[in-house]
Image 1 (spheres, helix red, strand yellow):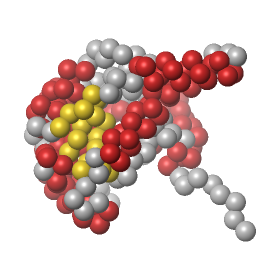
Image 2 (cartoon, helix red, strand yellow):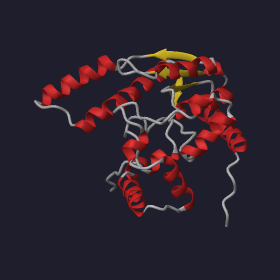
Image 3 (cartoon, one colour):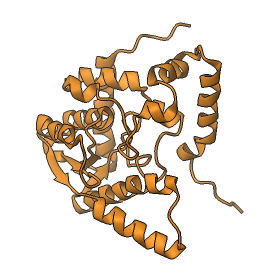
Length: 247
């Protein structure tokens, strides 16, 4: 059976209603706290939450690691939506934790640990802001990222509610347009903001290819298919509950 065409307007309205319902049941009167990167995902989530809750209940937290070259995009989103913006520069925390860990280990942290540390510190900051401002933290991951594990466990992979985790990158972009966001925020090349490369450079394939494979099972390059399947299988643990011993 042919899959129905994606109706961005309908999905946006249903997602807004879902967010509103979540806050009614899990945080009546609470604020929404979102880490704002200036990319499409945080931009779309922020726009949806503003529509669901009102701009006075949405707090955008900007967390540059020292100097962020595209911080102006994050600031543009805050101004465009008219939400409260808070900036916490994570560079001192990253440097202090790195120095402490490396001193304790008597060696340098691994490259992957160094890449993931800022994301985990950012989530700690989001929860510090959330608990100080009567908030709930928004997760901003999308289905495409989750499918191949392109997130940091206990970093950007977590949160209290997740509006985009069933939507591919292409669908998130359509949702952003339906929400009336500026094109430069919707079409900004996705990047993790950690290692200086785009998402697609790191993954080795395009989101267009990945999205089509997720939704239709179709893919032309067998090598890419194998890589996607391997990443999906290897990273499923990030989406599952922590294993526990049971009596």
